[in-house]
Length: 308
Image (cartoon, rainbow, N blue to C red; front, side, top):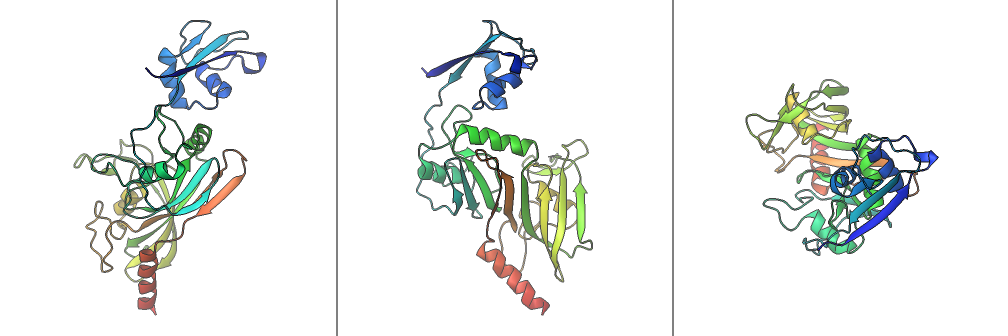
């Protein structure tokens, strides 16, 4: 039987006339929005009764919250080397190598970033989702390298997740694409949804979700362009889909292009280079950068020499 923790709060003038789901997050900052929604059905009462999320709390209302204590994860930690950029009591910033899956799934039960983080952080990890598991706040594709944030406690996980949701984080990517882009700057505003031809792929779809990508040319080569990319939205495969759609697929992308290239690169040349956000505890803006992989540097050097 799962262990549970019970907390009771009395509404004061300061928090009155606020929606129930919102006030719970104010009273208990360890609960995420999803956790509140999940608990409203069975584990949250107002004056002993169940209320809807939209219920406006009143002065004197007694709110009882029953939280499940996270279970121990079934996932095993693995002694896999990690490229750590920064670490403190709240966050772990990694430079993920290309070819490494972030979280276990079908076909990748082990050898992931999550397994490595379990071994490195041991007990110090977010328990969001009802299980003590690596607090991976966001993901990047297997063959995309670069910046990854790990939350080491629930407070940090919720704080950074909210920043991502509210678009106050800024992530900068770099990519090498096929073709010489004419413009120096451009914005791609095309909705993205699941591909109707291949359910494993995403595609531009007028009925899909809003997706906005900004690109800026760093250097133009004869047949390639090295670009900086910022995204306003975080749709699955967004950068890869958008660049392929406008005729400049990422070099090495086996899914959204044929992947063929003279550099022998397998998998997209896309790197999450920099991230800017507010530290969950200090509230100060922080910036972290991930160095380009060696193979990426070598390809750029080769292109530079060919231009000489």
